[in-house]
Length: 205
Image (tube, rainbow, N blue to C red; front, top):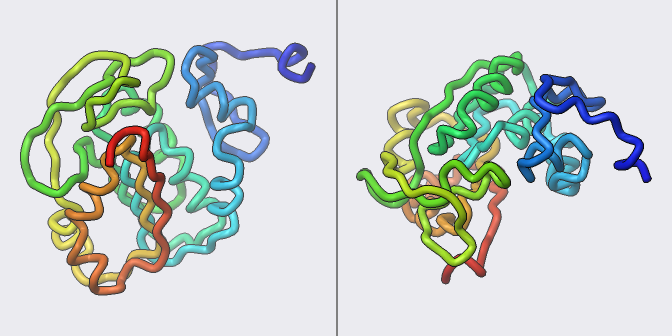
């Protein structure tokens, strides 16, 4: 009933009741569920509870909704790093990051277990902007492309050195194991306080 009564501001940039800024796209599953307030509610509630003081690292940032919630109540000195290889998300992710009061950087490449170029699948999927993956599986819809992949260990060493990481979020549509393998050194140091990771066994082992 609520959905039926809702006035959809298709294509407009709106600020939702929780403060998140969004361009409304009722065709895209990510934007649609964020607009309706049904996107990953338990996860966003958890992220809202955090008060981060060091870096928030978002691997597979999409349009930045989880990054925004992780920093919503955090210390203003906390910084961020957002990794998103799909060009479909760049404009919205840039808008989200510009809306943050925290300093940080967006990286337009993927994170994995090696430093190389790799194929990426599911680009340009108008029904699900968050479905692009470096894993080819039966559920992939969209185009194939190529992206640069880097190890998180390498990027963190270059950017923050031995400084602590308050939060590492990984959501890479089945590529999570490769992200972990490329972050082995960082994980072994214990400098990463909280890890939130999606696991997608239907996409592979």
